[in-house]
Length: 115
Length: 113
Image 1 (cartoon, each protein chain N blue to C red):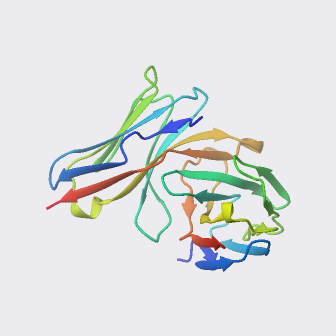
Image 2 (image 1 turned 90 degrees about the horizontal axis):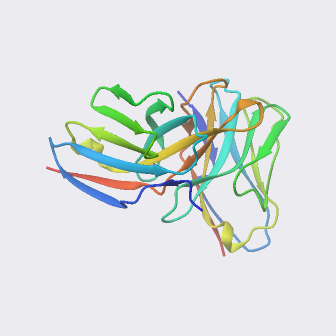
């Protein structure tokens, strides 16, 4: 059973508007949540993260919100730019041996920013 | 700025062949890991390592072996390739402790026929 889910395979947004990407999870033991951005033929690149004890983290145009009671997080991009067009992965962190971070990924959402 | 380097970028194998996917990082990271990405799915953890000589299984370890003899290198071995192992493989590394950012390589696209 998938512990991290992104229910929207794709999202199309006009340039300058807000993009909102959503993610749901089932495991209450996750201690961090992360967003990664991926361009074709490249590896994922880290975007922003949030600790499970926080409800909001902001970095420039990117803000992540965490609602622990609903087991839901979202990534807001304001304003959206053409270079934001990519696949966005939500990931949750659980701990393995010696506290190693193990990432559990959602399926990804393809964001397209239209001029 | 090499970061995480994976070789090869592309590979075609016949069923039953073995091969090793190479991964090297130059950031002196303690943690290294291997993920696979299949169409319509997110990345899934295969194996990970917390330092030289210490490895553990992830979510989908069957058919793969790893070892870590140095901090820099973390190769992934396919012992007897199967069509179900056709996938894109990503290696990642990160600092230990509370660090949440993992750095990924560019990936190896593997096809098993």
